[in-house]
Amino acid sequence: EVQLLESGGGLVQPGGSLRLSCAASGFTFSTYAMSWVRQAPGRGLEWVSGISGSGGSTYYADSVKGRFTISRDNSKNTLYLQMNSLRAEDTAVYYCAKDEGYCSSPSCYPSWYFDSWGQGTLVTVSS
Amino acid sequence: DIQMTQSPSSLSASVGDRVTITCRASQSISSYLNWYQQKPGKAPKLLIYVASSLQSGVPSRFSGRGSGTDFTLTISSLQPEDFATYYCQQSYSIPPMFGQGTKVEIK
Image: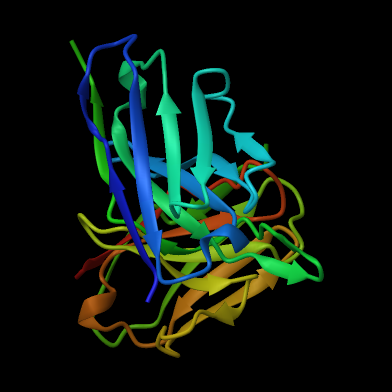
């Protein structure tokens, strides 16, 4: 069974930093691209960032480009999101999500839709 | 970026009703359209991928259709556990944008 467990959320002041983690289990982590998707209170879903299975390719929404950094440690089955220069509008529940992916030997590629999600971690940016 | 627009934003329906939600893309996305269900306080759940493929474990009362720019999600006979918010999402290009959501409420 796929399990994704986020951690690292909390209250941070504007301009501050936070690092989120997502511990994965139940699948071959290094094979699959992963993404972070956020949801502001009472709002819809917003894709934030994605990373290939190897970690060699990363992708960002314009709203976080230059401030957030996605990374992964495949030896620890863990996904990260380093968030710097945080703003009030970054307040949201942050979900890590496993990409469905597809493989065409010898490589696997993102499909950019998400078949498993974590329970989310709340980030609040406020003074 | 490809914008996704859902309609309606909310609807009221009764158990047993047939419900259809529409999603329109700002440009053609072929069949790269996915649907999610989200209940309050919970993570989204994938229902339908690439327009019409039912995710494993999802009841067959859920179905998806469409290609190009216009897509629909249909619930053939609404059940009590289906009251939730539904989101479409395009996976044709980065960023993979979501629609604004459709809240299905009890009449």
